[in-house]
Length: 119
Image 1 (cartoon, helix red, strand yellow):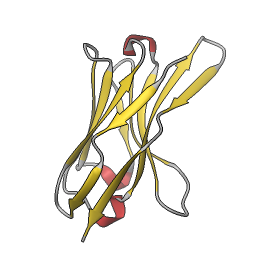
Image 2 (cartoon, helix red, strand yellow; image 1 turned 90 degrees about the horizontal axis):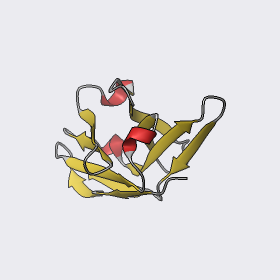
Image 3 (cartoon, helix red, strand yellow; image 1 turned 180 degrees about the vertical axis):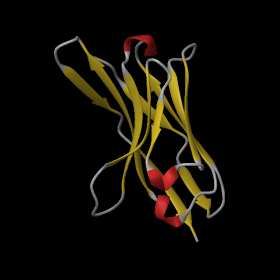
Image 4 (cartoon, rainbow, N blue to C red; image 1 turned 30 degrees about the vertical axis):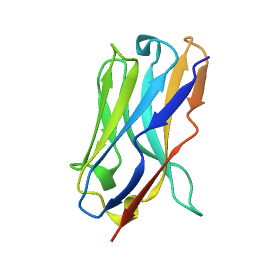
């Protein structure tokens, strides 16, 4: 089990920046993949960015060059730096932790944090 709590959401004008953080209740060394997803009203939840235990990262095409995912093992957190925000980035952002025991995967989610970008 792992509990996750996001922070850092808010209201920002287009072109601005926000930094989201996800705090985990256990060492991130035990987490295989740490990610950020977002869900806009009436839409499905989509992957924004993910970083795995080896440090490899993957981004949605829509955020490449603007968002950066990173991790802080000392604080058991991972972060999403969002620059040059656009109104279409408006959504509830969820952090995700994926763990495997070698046979099965378990996914854990935070409660979400609202990001609103005004034009």
